[in-house]
Image (tube, rainbow, N blue to C red; front, side, top):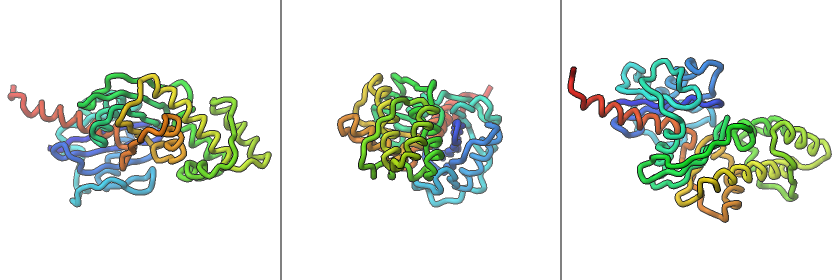
Length: 283
């Protein structure tokens, strides 16, 4: 039985394909101007085992060919993410909250708290032993604490996105930002740069501000073991390190591929529904 999950996010899109409920392949691409078109690109990335957002696949997949797979081969497809409603070939859609909780539970069994730091919003969730979300809170009114915020700052600092986290850890001087609004922070950061303040110190201050905002969300749902971070920012060692410090040194679990949690959860929901469909008697 083949099932598929499609997660159309604001900055990236993922496709996960399961065979009998187990990971077969996945793909990760940048979200294009049209969500429907992006969905097809994500499927193509999955069948050809291509990850464009971070340059390489990081999870071990079965050593079998998948480039022959087609959408028509899927027994059930579930879409999620902000563009879930316009995926033309999905049989159903499920909210990203439910999918991220379920996907994180599969990636890190026994998870209790999930922080998903996406491009557009930041979600803090509590998850039960079945991967069901029991409590959540979303920060979607401000870019601070999201992937887009980090992208804007990286562009302003002229530092490659994948290097900003590590560079922030080289700071030798504490810099405090008076605001977390993206526009004001960007202006303040550029001004400091012109004054000769090092990029490492500026980035450290920005990562501290991001992390404090995120931890405020987490404390509203409560943080317990196991604590998992998903989403693109999970690859940012600067943010992950500071969140851990602000939470008193709690262990943070990062999946091998943190960006596919939503698509994986969607694929698992598709597997459930395909099974129910198969068990229904013919009309």
